Length: 234
Length: 384
Image (cartoon, rainbow over all chains, first blue to last red; front, side, top):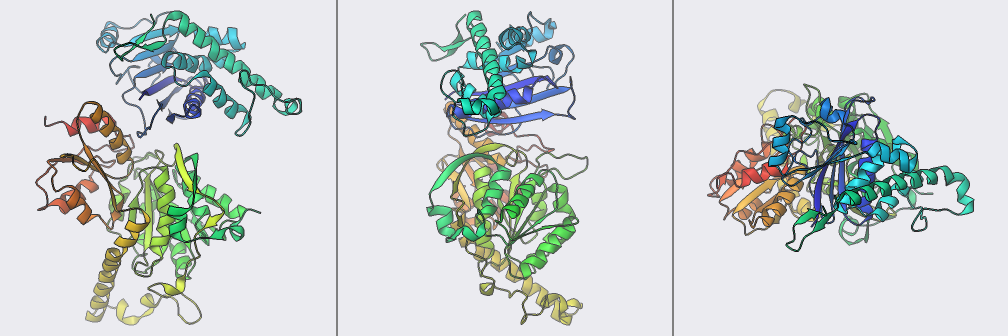
């Protein structure tokens, strides 16, 4: 059974909680199980926000905050550099052989202690220019959160892209609406009401696809080796 | 129009066990209100407190839709719990709900329900008892409920919250029982998180309350109100009052004993046992059960067999069931979401003289944080 504790950390306004719900719902759409626990103080921009997502392709029992993650997603470099996080340092409780995705075009400078601890845990730290990818693919940096969950989907293979798109359609267009496969499209009659929202789905999907492409190019995608253990392609 | 008039009455057995069910991915608050939708409730009584508010808000919507007949907004918890005393005594089906500090505020009234032999359902969404202020899940308030005379069920998840709420009405109104039933879940973890819940059709509902077949008559033109408070011998300090009070308390205790078979029938046994042959056992209730199930799965991956006893009913407490399940145990841990460890105390008192097992004094988390599976695993294999 594939089962991951995903801890997402960012700052207010980045859509961390929204992204965690889309990721979680994508797993549900794919037939798996998932729970979300968002965690934040009084809502305000640039204040710490965390969201805990458990995802599995089988039965999930656990609930509550994630103290021991095996996937950490950092939406903003200030989580690391300014300590804008409920869990300090940003990798606290990390399990062995976990990976960390950071939204930064280049490596963040870490202290010697931090480098050593991450090495001891055999953690892989992946830096990706999520804001730039969002700007290029969707024309807005608001879609940065989608790039981050696109990268999670690319690395884990859970949820798949089709299920993520279903989750997005449910988010923007509501339940019970069936859009045709591939890229979401609508009948002419519905175009008027749902057109702008459909545009949002497609832009967000473009951001997700761009992230998947980037992760594949970097060799981050996890594959199962002959021995049964999981390794990245590069 | 969707309302209670168009729902079809079926037996509790049919609604709980026989009617086909469909799956929905919903929160615990939604699960509780969906149970109330099918429970043929006459009056819901509300006073808000986090994390209970969402459930009572949804039940307000049920009133607007016509699924319950009246909705009363009380002035505070003392008011809410007194109002439900009056409502229940008039013979109608009624429910209310609260959390941590609100429950504590109304505790005097809650503890008077069993003595008045009031059938009702009281939902508890567990929350830290202030101060310092917190809205997070911590089930310390259930320690106070244990000696209140209420029947007390502790649900593990959203599915239990749906099933136990419906079962609660059926248990509460049995003639041999005639007692309030409290159905507790841990707040937020259950109430605000979504999970798969299987539910029978909303076109079905429980039969109405049959108030003329209960142990104590309700108020009507022939039964004057509140006999036990009006009769002079009971109000005075004298030997008659002592005897009457003692007999009354014994009768509540006896009603608890008689309730065992009904609780067991409607929630499928007072306990659930997983891996009964294991010598290392976890005894848990509420959300701690879910955490323990994951610990069991991880222990199995490590090649270790661990057993789990889920205590579903805290009152009546599954004394015989626990003794039987723990007879061969060597080590028992009791993970809990509260500081004093009320379940640990119950387990020790129950197993004293009936088991050779070493019972660990934990693990416990409190203040609202979750119980990490890693902590349970650490306590399980601490001695090795």
